[in-house]
Length: 202
Image: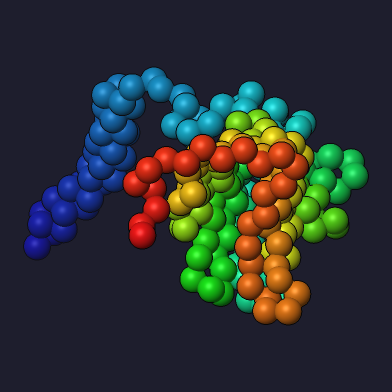
């Protein structure tokens, strides 16, 4: 019995030495087999991007949504926005969507824009394209839009195609009839229409 106890004691002492050594050997093997890649390299943005973002206070993919008193839904999205000191935002790839209670809607896209929430206005500029669910496709260089009211107004000339044909005008405005509350587009200042046969149904 004494021999058995002594053997067991020696075996335990040997395990106390061997097991830690084996564990160290396994860990060293793992380190040798792993690559030397910097773990920070796995982060999908660079330190330069973070520093630039902090410096410029850049916001990516911002969105703004509102509704008119009549229930028309108005939404704006942008690829990027940078705040100004006067509580306004400079935006790139600015887009707007209006879903009217009448069931009609329109989309507006532009290269740049200015979001002025205190004034409830967004200005879209640079290759502005307006498309409506009623079949109009309108191009202009700048348009002011309400962010919580159904209103829009171009700063200058528009070129358009729609149910009446192809036409140009000095100005376009989206407004609401004060009596019926229905929205409509108004084209003014030298409207020139070129009738395209087949664009309207008899």
